[in-house]
Image (cartoon, rainbow, N blue to C red):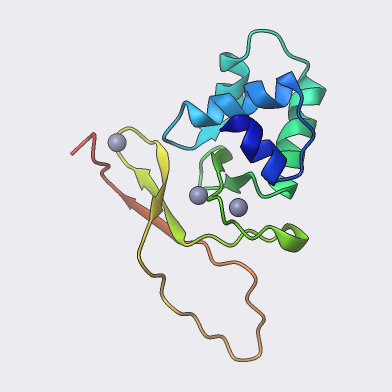
Amino acid sequence: MITQLLKDKRLRLTSFRKEVLQVFMDNDKAIAVSDIEDALNDFDRITLYRTIKSFIEKGLIHEIVMPGDVKKLALCAVDCNHEEGVHDHSHIHFQCKICKEVFCVDVPSLPNIDLPGYQIDEVEIQVHGVCEKCK
Ligand SMILES: [Zn+2]
Ligand SMILES: [Zn+2]
Ligand SMILES: [Zn+2]
């Protein structure tokens, strides 16, 4: 699974990349860089930052910035269109006000936003409320 994902995204297989990707696989929520650092035993910070950057560029993971919160990262959908660094997702970002966790949630359809005169590259929808576990 992990090996295939890296291959699909044309990323060279290294044991470190597999290790970092595994941390994302182990979480059903968006994670912060500090969560990845906690999950890794031994790592070089520069290598970790480079790995995260290349994962984002290749459309393997995406960044989520909720207002007033630290930057989080989450796996992209398999069909994420990452051309020119643009992430195209048909999901919303949900933040639970109780556990504070951020989740990528798939929705059947997103509102169609039409902005005459503007070119839309990316639409991000952020929703706040109470997650399934905290309800
Ligand atoms: Zn993406
Ligand atoms: Zn919650
Ligand atoms: Zn997401």
